[in-house]
Image 1: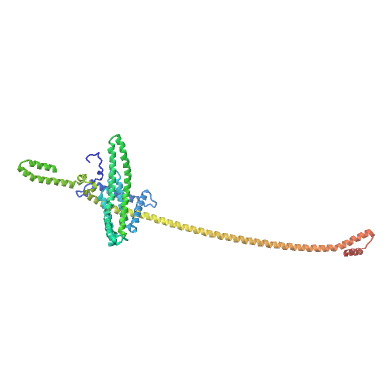
Image 2: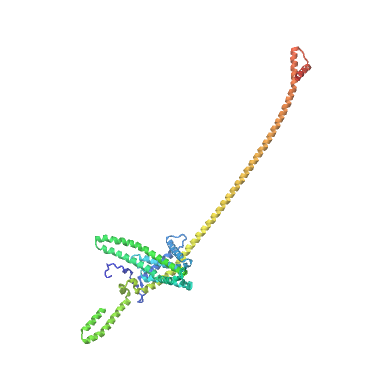
Amino acid sequence: MADPNKVDPIHQFQITDIVSFGDGGISFTNSALFMVLTVGLIAAYLILSTQKRALVPNRVQLVSEMLYEFVAKMVSDSAGKAGMKFFPFVFSLFMFVLVANMFGMIPFFFTVTSHIIITFALAMLVFAVVIIYGFWKNGFKFLKLFVPSGVPAYVLPIVVPIEFVSFLSRPISLSVRLFANILAGHITLKVFAGFIVTLGGLGFLGWLGALLPLIMTVAITALEFLVAALQAYVFAVLTSMYINDAIHPGH
Amino acid sequence: MAGSAQDIIYVAQAETGDALQEGTVVAPAEEHAATDAAHGTEGTHASTEAHSEVFPPFDPASFGSQLLWLALCFAALYLLMSRVALPRIGSIIETRRTRIEGDLKEAERLRQETEKAAAAYEAALAEARKNAHAIAEETRAGIKADIEGRRADVEAQLSKRVTEAEARILTDKTAALANVATIAAETAQALVARISGSATAAEAKAAVAAVNKE
């Protein structure tokens, strides 16, 4: 860090204050800035592109409609008609994660989803929604979630704890999956890009050698775009499935 | 800072016993002040000092701020989506769907109408064809009857004329045959007169009648 030429793959995750509000830890940071940008971009795009409410959509409006129908289909396929109550929630999650991931692909931009506290908070939100709605809708029948139907009674003492633990581990797996994918991807990208710089400083042979990490960087960039979209999709699909559990607790 | 405090302690220790006594009293106070300062640094400049040691995504110092802004941003996003964007997109899609359904229904209705019209046309055509056939048949029958009638007339007239003609021929023949005796008598008289010089008409007639009888 002291040497400005040395590539530090961790530096991109550092949170720095942009506007400080005292020492309360509520400063407006680069992370906050990109969250605001993410929300702003999503809202601006979806609202402005559908301003005309065209019966025959143009391209920008079509993108909004496709996103809508994509998530709507995802929710109704996993959670049925009753699950459509949660469509705005799943849609917001999907768009937030997707756009935050995509923002992260732009050089020098901060990746909001590369911090576990963010992904964990989102996962806990899903978890809380599932538990609260599950109990509110089904009462104690929600606990049937841990008792799969059609399982013989003598297996239940084994199955129920497994189900319970797997249920409790959901927010962890949901958050770590997204966080780890994004974090690892960005570190890998930075490390390989760093090789180019380091090798490039070694003269002609170094330039030749730098070709290899250059190709890798390009390939990993493409892969990271895929991961960015895929992880948003996975997050949304799993959320829909968990919501389905809250609506229909019996397996 | 802690290092300089230690130095002070050592410096103090190097001096006289009184000073040593003093030093040991002073040193903890200084050390305390030093650690206080260090704590202060960690507390106020968490974002600069702490980050160089802790892996940033696991640095609890930034959790509060991130959670706060995430809550604000996500709440805003959820409200914007559920109140503005999604109802609008939903209504656009719904309007289009009902419009397409309506158009398809209208098209189906029109198609059925067309089919009905085509069927009516077919029926009318068949009826007309049948009528035409009947008219043709009737006309043909009428003409045939007419022709038959006229032919019968003509035939009747012809046969009447034939019988009349036959009757005339018969009378003419009998008349002619009746005249034959007279002509023969006259011829015979003329012949006899030429040969024998004289012959009466009565004799000639008798001779002809005698010949006729043979």
